[in-house]
Image (cartoon, rainbow, N blue to C red):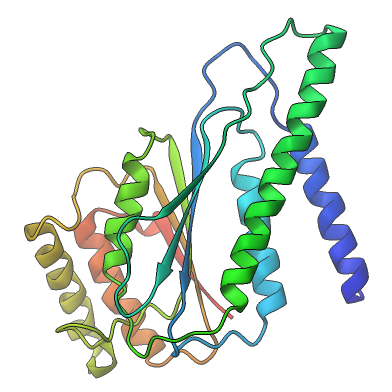
Length: 252
């Protein structure tokens, strides 16, 4: 399939998802949020950037396919001094409150869906621009990311489900923890648990509120010490309270 045809298929598929969703049942609809985390440090090189951007776009669109209220996206940027407060962006257009099946309802619903598609497209362009922007930081502060994720949980919460999409090699090199110095699998796992316990003790992250989190971590092809880094995060996530089914790593 050519690149042009692939992009066309992608747009048609997404339009079908969005138009098929958003049915109104009279019940309070569930609240879904996407949190996008983009690593902007010099250690990151994605050689298949266009495919990665399409994956992220599809993730975003699937997250909000059936969402009709409290539509919010949070964006975090990893640097050598990662900010713990995400950039919050909300779709404020109210879902039609007309009699279902009426002509007025159908007109308002079409207008609402159109505005929602435009909002999602604008979010995707913003994320693509961030992915493609130059990197300036020579160190990576990855741990502040999780403080930011919990800030996203609090903002307009509670949320039924939060999908976190992280584009990073997940390798902290700032502060007292340089993960490039990890030596063996067991040590990496235990170090991950220890670092998480330290963040909990310091109040930077909390336990007991991770049930609604689902993480997909897209790592670059040039990632170093992949096995040890993965083991570190397995220990970290276990200590934090995440089940194995709540996170996955996808290498470019």
